[in-house]
Image (tube, rainbow, N blue to C red; front, side, top):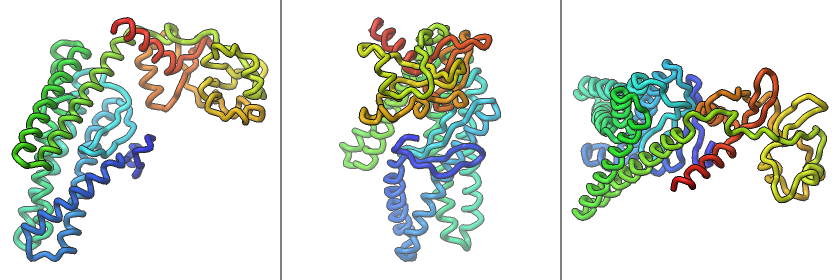
Length: 372
C-alpha cells in the first residue's frame, strides 16, 4: 500500500482505503456544511449544526463508497478481479485488476456507479419528503444528500475519460470500431478537451472574484488532464507489448546459486561491471526460489557477510508460474494484482528463465527511445 493511503476496512473481499489528502477535503466540506446549515437554520445551536455537518459529510462519503462498490460488484460478476476502493481528494476510485475484455462489460461496469447514485438520491429524496413536516434535522440532511448525489451523477456522466461517462463513451466507440486502443485515444482526447474547459471556467470564476469555485474547477480540470494522459499512456504501453510473450522478454541465462551462500560470497562470483538481474536459488538440484539483484543491493554492505540468500529470495511457494507462450500484458496485470515482482517461465516442467518488471520496462524504454 502507498504511504499516502490509509486502510480502513475490508468488506466483501474488497479493501477500502483513503488517500490522506482526503482528510483535508473532509474538514473543508464539514466546515462548509456547518456554515450552510447555520444560515438555513438559525434556530440551531453551534453544536447542533456542527454535528449535523459532520454526519452529513460522512453520509456523503458513504454514498461515494456505495457508488464505487456498485462498479466493483458488477465487475466481479463479470469475472474481473477487484483490488480496492480508495477515497481521494475528488471522490473515489475503484481499482480493478484488469481491463474488461468486451465493450459490453465495460459499459455495464461503468454504468453501475451512476445508477447506484441515482438510487441513493431517490432514497434520500423520499426521506426528505417523509421527514420535512416533523423531523427538521433529518429532512435537511436528506435534502442535501439527495441533491449532491444527483449532482454526482451528472458530473460522472460527463463524457471525459476517466469519469464514468468517459468510460461509457469508450465502450461505445470500442463496440462500434472493434478497436480498444482507438476508443481509448478518442475518450482520452475528449477528457483532455473537457479538462481545458474546466481550467477556463475556473479562470473565469477567479476573475469574477469567486476564488473557491475557481479553485475547485481548476482542481477538477487538473485531475481530468492528468488522468486522461495516464490512461492514454497505459493504452500506448499495451499496444507496445501486444503480441509479445514471456519467451520474448524473459532472462534465460540466470546464474544458479546454492542456499547457504552469503551475499558477500555471491558478489565475489559475479562480474562487478554487470550484475545479473536474477539468480535461481537451488538446494542441491531442487529449485527453491528467485533472488533479484535489487534485493541484494538493498541490504547494507556491513551485513553481507552474515546475510544468506534464502533470507532475501522470493520462495517457490510465493512464485506464480507462467508458460512461454503467455502474453506479456496479461502476465503484467497478474503481477500487479498479486504484488509479484517476477515470475519463472516454465514449459513441461522445465525452468526456461525469469520474467520481471525490469525486463518489460527495459524493453519499453528502448522502444520509446527509438521512436521518440
